[in-house]
Image 1 (tube, rainbow, N blue to C red):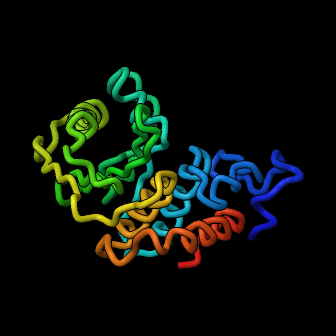
Image 2 (tube, rainbow, N blue to C red):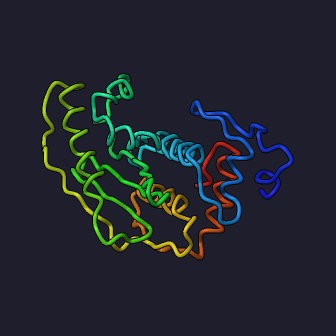
Length: 219
């Protein structure tokens, strides 16, 4: 695993899937206490989607990429219509939405639970205030997406918005991306988002290096 995250060839392609190219430099963001980049987070979320698609006992997933929320906040649904032109979001159970807080250079994870009409927001820093801006924008997006793609309003237009205050917390500033991926992975298996913390981050990082380089999840 260590060989995959080190020079001498940072631009060497390790794997290409999901229209994403993962290089040695990308994998190096999983080494030590580096901060994860967009490529790693997007690839990992696609692995979750792929795993769940082959197991009828797991929720049907759709993953937004890391550029979705910035575009949504800056330009609204109209700028994103083409992103889902071949996708029925409402045929899924959960939508995984990575959230980057630019001012803090910090990753969070939002989970849109279409069955429970709930948006759950995970922030490994805890966060004293819920991120109403993102959760409200996601709710508006769902309303407009339903009207645009299905020609009808949401069955329940008002989603419950939950800031998951009791989620595991990070202790080191650069582990937010790993925590966010772990939140998504637990949600994808419909298991409680607990039982891990800072002590498990080195293991999660090594595991993600292996899974991404092999193009499949271990579990």
